Amino acid sequence: MSRTLDEVLFSDPNPKVEAVLRVVSVAVAVVILGSVAAIVFRFHAAGQFELRLWEYFAWPTTWAFLAKGLLGTLASAATAAVIALVLGLVLVLGRLSRSRLARWPATAVVEFLRGVPTLLLIYVCFLVLPSAGIKLSTYWMLTLPVGLSAAAVVAEVYRAGVLAVPRGQTDAARSVGMSEAQVFFLIVFPQALRYIVPALVAQLVIVVKDTTFGYVVTYGELMQNAKVLVANYHALVPVYLVTAVLYCLVNYGISRVSQRLGRARRSRASA
Amino acid sequence: MDSVLRLWANYGPAFGQALLLTWKLTAISFVAGFALGVVVTVARLLPLPPLRFILTGYVEIFRNIPSAALLIFIVFALPDLNVLIDYEPSVILTLVLVCSAFTADYLRAGINTVGGGQVEAARSLGMRPMRIISTVVLPQALRAVVQPMTSLLIALMLSTSLASQVPFPGKELTTLVAKIANDSAAGMAAFAVAAAMYVISGLLIAWAGATLEKKVRILR
Image (tube, rainbow over all chains, first blue to last red; front, side, top):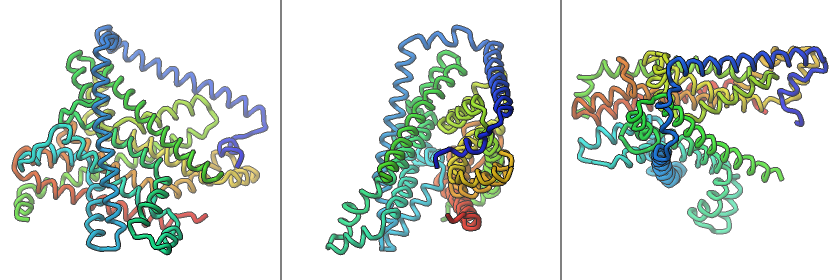
């Protein structure tokens, strides 16, 4: 298909229609700019442009503090991702196992971790485990639940990848005398990985989003450090706005990488 | 088991109410978010560059912002701009915005599964673009996205736990567990009950989604 759907939908040889569309476009642009102006005016009317609410953004210490928070976010997210990738592999091996003794518990663990909110798991680590005598650091109170939640999803992603590998590959590998472990780790899994790398990278976005709950356990990630800045400068709107932009940029970046990997794979497949 | 029974005696009705509130928040956010997502998707198809630009920005922002950050902005920062929204509507608004962005994203992918030839055929029959969208493109796109929408609905249900971050009087499941864990030693049992309720709700949604998917699937 050479033309995109919307080109086909609205292509019109009639110059009158084109002219009308141009006028409507301009009108829409005016409405949008008007809304932006109204928001800016709202900021002004609420006194949100006062210098004291913004001047600390000119200080390197503010950015250093936010950067430290972002580093905390990334540290927690990276560890959670490793937990998810490793535990997800263990869980998918269980789910695909031929032994019921491995399959049922693995399935139960996946359904449980997938079906429970990350925030609830965080509360368990934060409020419940200490009363049972288990004390985790704030880092693990955040990272462990986020990693466990992601592990269940990653296990499902692995499974989809493994099931997408043609059966003939497994049969061929078995027929040359490979052991079950060799078949999985040398033949099936590497091919499955190629299908699912974009989905795994996309999963990172969810991990980064989940680490936002660091402020619940006062782990120094971006949101928690933003809260500290808010308390220091009494500037809720500017700090939370800047924080939101930072989160969006990081996650948008990850999404783009994932899309690019997906496209690269598809074009290689079609070549 | 004993502790679960004792917990049920003390907090049974509270758990029933919490589950209902969780379902209510989920249902309202999903219906509104889905409707808004469809509107955004259709508006993004219109040949109006400024509208496309702003809506693409809308989708990217609410797809990538953490819901917790969005909720905190709505609840704690907006009052500084003289926009005061009550706690429960704030939670719903957060979930609606996020749900609509993901809906728009999935529907867009669903629309891409509709062949351009069908649109050209409809046009050659003299159908207007908006009519083509509503009778040819959207129905097929909606049928193609049942699976991701089911996952989105489950994710949305889990996200209602965000309500535990704001002090509104109603208690959904996560708030209730946090409260019980604070008040008594029954935290673990409370967690087990709430987790079971979440998991079962999720499995029900997944089952309903799979049934619907089987009914409406388009074999290509």
